[in-house]
Figure (cartoon, rainbow, N blue to C red):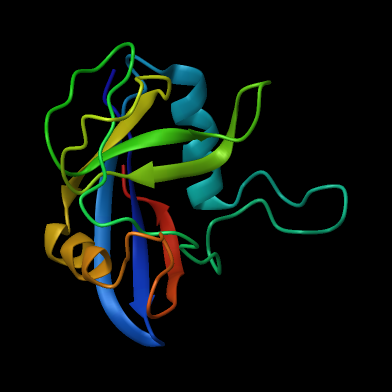
Amino acid sequence: MVNPRVFFGLSIDGHPAGKIVMELFADSTPIIAENFRALYTGEKGINTVGKPLYYKGSTFHRMIPGFIDKNFVKKIIGPGILSTAKTGKRGNGSQFFICTGKTKWLDCKQVIFSQVVEGFDVLKAVDKIGSSSSLTSKPVMVIDCGQLC
């Protein structure tokens, strides 16, 4: 099985910043990878209140410089890891984080489902506008997204 590749085209403060390409780990996290793949393509349609189930038009609402975590299946392999973000006791939703460095204080409870394979320069640009309080100094928006293969 070939793992799918998806992308985000990002803007920072309203200006195009470039593209980040990610490989989804469908081989080790098939359900999570498929859910996220469909959110990149928009093929899940709309939710019960009419909101698109699609990352396009979404903003990065938090950015902590140098952030990384590890999971149950994959080992920490450096910056560019994508992991699910816990949204409550019942599990993970569509929120995630992209790691940009190592942090040893996290507790290994999220699942790694993807990694950045292209666009580390864009990831570094996003990392630079984060803060220790997690608020971004400039808005970061997904202006395009989809599946490459």
